Length: 384
Image 1 (cartoon, rainbow, N blue to C red):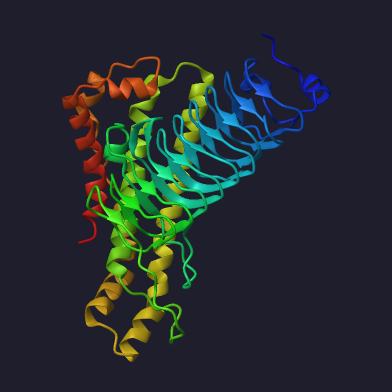
Image 2 (cartoon, rainbow, N blue to C red):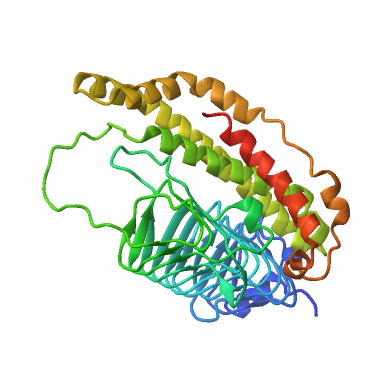
């Protein structure tokens, strides 16, 4: 099939911006009338379908094979093979949907990473989340409809990214799925283990660190009471959860650098991989910045706690993090990343990325998991 000219696209009711390289739009992709394609970084692979239900605006996104974006706004996002989104989507920079990850109608994502098969219902807002879990489209992690990740605090900070699953286990597609019940929410920064079920209708405010747990979120006591914005508590947990998130992003970046290139078949696959690496760098930069912002905000919190009988242990943690942050940041930036070693030599890429991962021998998976976990551990061990 020949590539359409921009004039032919316009005559078909599709606006292709002047800076878009038509060679980066597959002749085997379908773009329905009413859609707009913008940005020199945009790439749309074979079998993709854009705008089947409503108009779509795509700006500097990379779509792999057989991606479906049914309606909405998509900017700076990356979609691996088979990912799909329903109408009314609002998907922004830093977002990555891996193989067959998906959202139904009216879903908003920003700096959100969904690993293969993760499924989101309708009317969902996720910002600053990484989610994994499950083994297939029939066995997948799920976010119920009308769910929100709360990523902005009364203290006006966003050191709030939540890790639902993890990278060292999640990339191997062998862990039990996570279920976040609908009409609910999660207050970041949180960590949720595999096999967890959060009951519908509640807001989860705690970590679930043990696998295969059911949590029925507690309802806060009603009433009005004194409250001082800018005063932090449980700072040690906040720092640890943020470092865990940073460690997992670093691990996923190394996976993209060393493993995913083995599955690049053409320029469209390469564009998706390049876009994924770019977004991981964007997420990493944002997470480090937000953690640094938190360190700066602790000066007022320390003063208030000291003047109002705050717990000594909490004050000491805040003082330590406030003073140690420059050195801690330097260690994050200069972290020595371990090499994958013999793990790569044992990889036997097949046509399907997910089938290739499933077919790995258990010893190979263990070696890869240990490599990625060492990256995470090196970051987490910076704060004890």
